[in-house]
Amino acid sequence: MGILDRIVNRKIGEAVKNELEKHLNNDDNHKENETITTETTVCEIEPVNPQPTVCEIEPIKTSCESGSCSLKPNNTSHFPRLLKEEFSEYQIKENISGSEIGNTERPYEFGLYKGGGLKAVIVLSEKNKTNNRAYRTAKEAAEKANVAFVNFFTHMPNERSYVIERIKKFLK
Image (cartoon, rainbow, N blue to C red; front, side, top):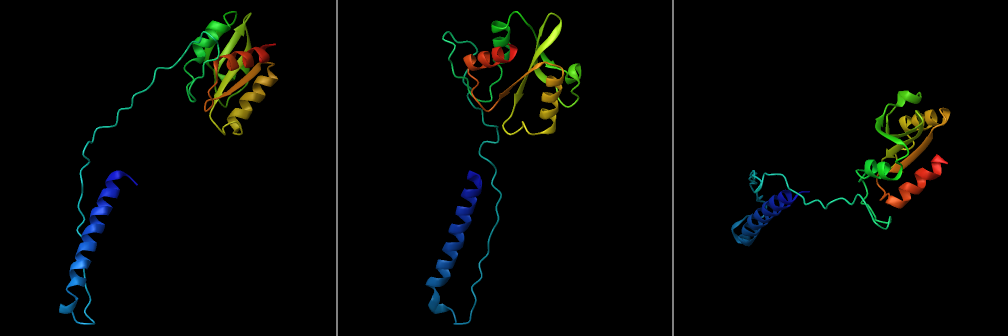
């Protein structure tokens, strides 16, 4: 429930309580079988600030001297720069069509090419998305084409050193 709902409910509750107390305090004036009725007025409250809330966003770290910086989860903006810096011997392409290697279900976020051929594809997956058909088909197509398939979860920090090590492991 939002804050406005809570305020409205509290005000209505207070009004009903006050009316009941008034009637109950005047108990001597009522007969035994008399019923007490109360009226409820519904009022619409305009939001105080109809403008959307603006949030401050911290700058994203994209490069680290020590190689051990921790990146915030759901931040994948560092991947293009990291790939270009650390895998300069490869041609890096973004949003690779899956049809290049027989996958019609989903594109690959990155492709690493060397000598004119695709050597690895990188997929950025949300939590619990690795069991869906599109993901499985993309992985199977890469395996059939003898192309390294590297997956990173976007809900994890994906530290720079971790990303580099995993990709190198798959490229061997």
